[in-house]
Image 1: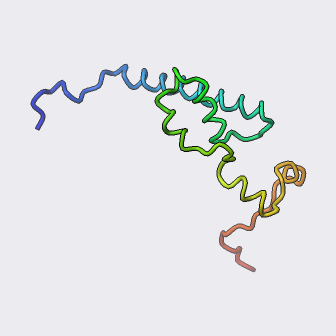
Image 2: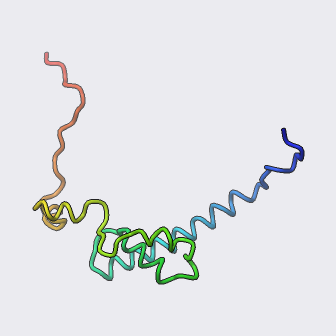
Image 3: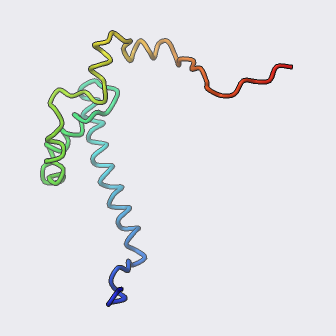
Length: 112
């Protein structure tokens, strides 16, 4: 039971303010990481780029320092290093070839 009816209620402007704050936070973080990726010549934003932004702007992103501290220094992202070791094609080679055709798992058309 709720003893006070005012507890748990949110003003109408609160979701708008929170969403704007989240938007500005994401813009700062992602834009900084994208700039780091461009500086290093990368085409993708990785966890390492996000980590470098957080570590440089300690006053702004100090609450994330513990989380990004778990990211390894040379970590490339989700499986990036493993793909290179397996001898798969580089990003440039894949772009030159164009999109690969995928086999669909849809139903077969009825033969007439």
